[in-house]
Length: 85
Image 1 (cartoon, one colour):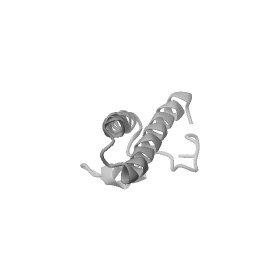
Image 2 (image 1 turned 90 degrees about the vertical axis):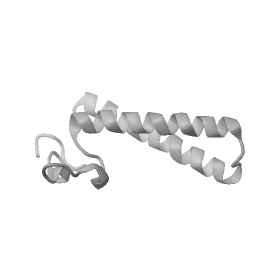
Image 3 (image 1 turned 90 degrees about the horizontal axis):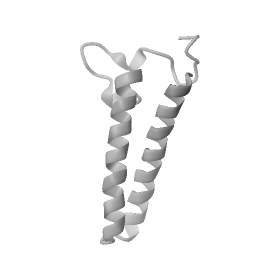
Image 4 (image 1 turned 180 degrees about the vertical axis):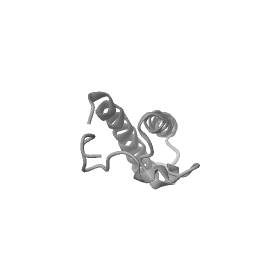
């Protein structure tokens, strides 16, 4: 994968991790205002990084694969490098 694509994907992964950790914490501390603020920011970061990645490289999940054609199958699969696609 190209370096820019890897960096963009890494941002998505970091944001997803932050959201998941915030959710787990909030399950036990549902009224913690700082945790709720962190969750809101992490969720926005995740949404923004996903949108940026998918606008450039295509969908990461089948939830966003619709459109005029089935875009999920375009581009390299996760186990392929770009030369094999």
